[in-house]
Image (cartoon, rainbow, N blue to C red; front, side, top):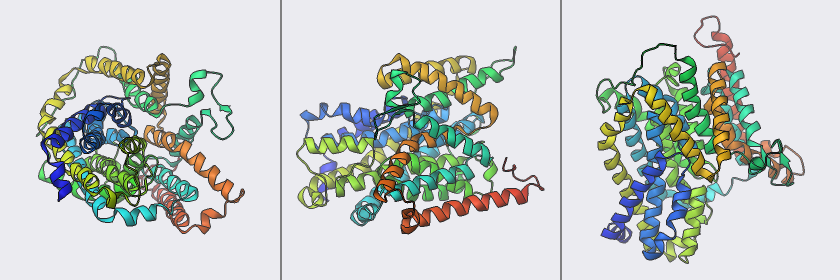
Length: 496
């Protein structure tokens, strides 16, 4: 209660409001991620109390997850890797005139997922953090392999094309400098590539530029201009709420558990939640073509992951993402050492920050729902004007990442790759997931092999790893058998 009373002080409420607004804007702008914005806020917070500074930073963290859904749904330009799955069905819904319900469900799912994760953060933070400590390199490798296999079997319609998308993503992920040996790999002698490919550059290129190029390639000469019209109500119907209630519930749990794991928790959570939802769906063929359940599950999961990522930070002092790593630096700047004793040594500060997460989620819901009617006005712009705007928007976003003209060339190359993937039927989503996880998978595999002196036996002797691998390969075998059996009926596409 003391933490809640501190969080509701006028100065702290103002900090939450400013952070929520900044975070939403950050989520809309490709390239300017929440970790960058939180880092830029650190000098500003010197003039305020630790409570106000940390409340503002966590509000930015939450707001960025909300904001990422706007451009994903309306323009198919995800600002973060965690928004990729939202873009797949969200943009298809926008093309069908249902951008309003998609944005509303996204905001409501984000609110529920964020609030749910804060409740779990309060109740089971310490036991869960101790369980997370059991995850070593072997377990991390297993869970990332689990996510990739799940995505191959469920996101795409072809397992072989899914594997090709996976291989392509991992191939791009290993471009750069080998952190162990210091040797550059696959850089073609280009100095800019020694640091690797920025994930956001690839996302903007494959989805944003790729969509523009695909529009130009498929637009017939003399074809009349059109708009992405809005049909029906802007807010979801009772039927929409009924269909998305379970996906939101499952996405909340999956997102929180994914957030506990250091690395790309929100990205991993959104991919797994989407894949699980497609498995549970009675109409899996609608996913990728405008399934509201897909938007609800992915967007809920990436917001729920924010609370999960704070668990190892506050209880163990281990950052679970880039943003929480910056928050760790901010805490230490204030002379606060996160760890098991934090909740007893600084109870007012910790509970003020946790209470402010409730407030930030409420503020974001209040900000986002009334603004839907204004956001959808973007779709009133004719496509012949909208597509060049997306192109400019994407190029500015790519340049803003490192202020480098080389990133503009890269984003255009990835745009051509995105067009190629659409033409041949490869999955851009699986490609991005492999790109996000590829580097972490390599490091985890190497660490695991070093610990075991080159043996792979630890992958079956670890109970967590063995369980994940059995489930993953079991699902893969089930899916392959099901596809072969259903070839005669034409219900599913063949494995090829």
